[in-house]
Amino acid sequence: MSVHYALITDDRTHELTTTNTSNPPTPTPPTAPLTRSEQFITAAVFLFPALALTVPDGYSIGAVALLIAAITHLVANRRTWAQHPPLPGAVKAVIAFMIVYALFWMGDAALRGEGVREFDRPSRFLLAAFCLSVFARARIQQAALWLGLAVGGIGAGGLAITQKLIEGHSRASGFAQVIQFGNAAMLIGLMCLAGMLWSLQPQTTNPDRLRRTRRRRALLTGLMGLGALGGLTASFLSGTRGAWFALVPALLVGLWAAVQLGKARLYLLSGPVALAVIATTAYFIPATGVEWRVDSAVNGAEAYFTEGQQGHGVGVRFEIWKGAWRLFTEKPVMGWGEIGYIQRTDALGEAGVIVKRAGEFTHSHNEWLNVMAKKGLVGTTIFAGLYLTPLLCFVQVGRRSSRASRSPNNDAVVLATAGLLFTVGFMASGLTQVNFNHNIGAMLYAFMIAVLIGVSGPPLMARSS
Figure 1 (cartoon, rainbow, N blue to C red):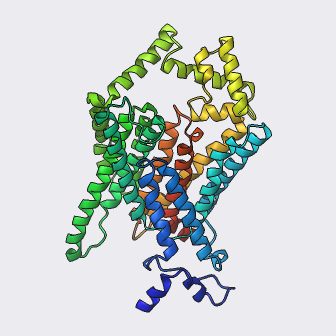
Figure 2: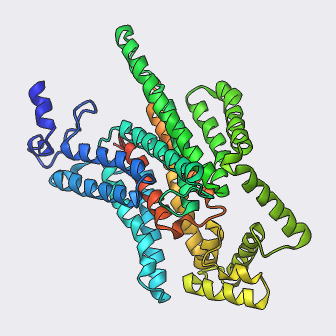
Figure 3: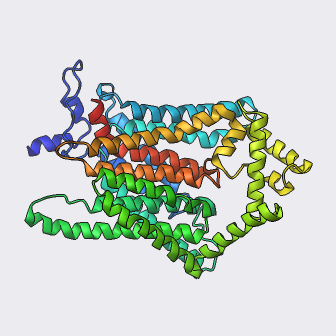
């Protein structure tokens, strides 16, 4: 047995175990040690969330590590790659929409003469699609994802506290644009909450081992809790109001997870209360600045609708949305493109259709309106698929695992919960910001989806094979 495990730690083992190329390779036992390239992927999966907000350009460093790891694994298994089971349809759909999104955005930019600059952010989805196609066929230790999220949440929280409460910044922004920092920190915090479900899962029923496991579970649960607290704290200290919208759909995702795990009654008694405590605490602690941000939004909206004040704060954002909708109705099929959007909104501002200040922005501060105005219904359909296909994938992982008749895979349900929290949270934060117009937004979404689905790969691949 020891000789067998020694052999399978080398990626070249697949060549030794497949003497007849006409037959598919024997699947590697899930309990076998990871190969060197799988260990590399696992390390990169840890680094991506751990570095995303804690060091300058951390999200880029982590994404490069993921890309190199994917290439390494593909090269190491190149002789047997074609014999792997086909990817599940849901995973293929995610990959397809990533590729179509990137090609459509780049092709549209080329046809409109918008320059190479508009090729940059969409190209990230091509790289992420490649990584996903590799990760879904690899074994990745999911502990790396949870620990990376915990480190990322703790780091973001510590950085935000330092900037806001010690250095006296008006809003914590880490090493990124302030809204993007707040959005990303919120998503990391929410995924850490899902990670607490993972850390609480008992790993053995042996009483002697259970005593040691309980200590380990307590340590991991405390670490994930600190990650959640750090991420949420960083988001609140950033003053990013759009990120707070993610808390509402997070409640529904939590209910879905509780149903899959058979804990619906407990969740209904505790989930809404926990959210209320978090929101109330953040609101009434003056140092967070949440009270001022909320009150200013409410007062701005009231002034816009009752007094017609359009040139400040929330009123400007309403005017931007008004202009974006106007552009969509003028060119509903293919939209105006980036340059056309800027020129047309500026013209609307000069003409007084929208307040002049609103015409100075290069995007609509709403992900959906931005796509509708710039890419029309064609682009909006593709964009919707970019969100909906991962949602379908995560729902399938959770439902299939929870319906297992004898041994439901609770770890898979927790992974699906994290994926749903990330996807719907990203969508919610996009109601007041265009995340994909920023490198951190595009890279975080593309590569985190690749990681989450990749780590969820075993139950998906088992279903398809």
